[in-house]
Structures are given as structure tokens and as C-alpha cells.
Image (cartoon, rainbow, N blue to C red; front, side, top):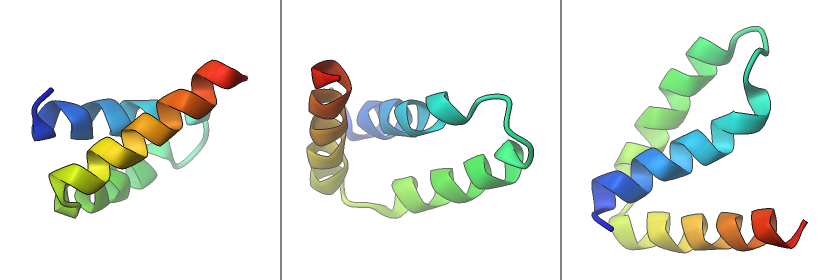
Length: 57
């Protein structure tokens, strides 16, 4: 998985529970900026952590 793909997947995973909430567009824009600024390794580690949590629930 490329760094860009991991970043896109992480953003979508973090936004999924918030779909339909008021103000989501602005939050999404801020989240994308923050995730894009993160190092690829950090994104992959966080994505892996989120996937493990999501699958264990």
C-alpha cells in the first residue's frame, strides 16, 4: 500500500462514524491536511491500529 493510499484509507476510516453530522465538511478538510502532513510510517501504524480496533469490536 502506498503512503497516499494509506492516508486516504485512514481519513475515510476516521470519517465513517461521523457521516451525516453537521460541520463534517470543515472537519474533513482539517483532517485531510493533518493526515497528509503525517509521515507515511506513522499513518500506516495508526491505520493498522484503527483496523485492529475496528475488527475486534
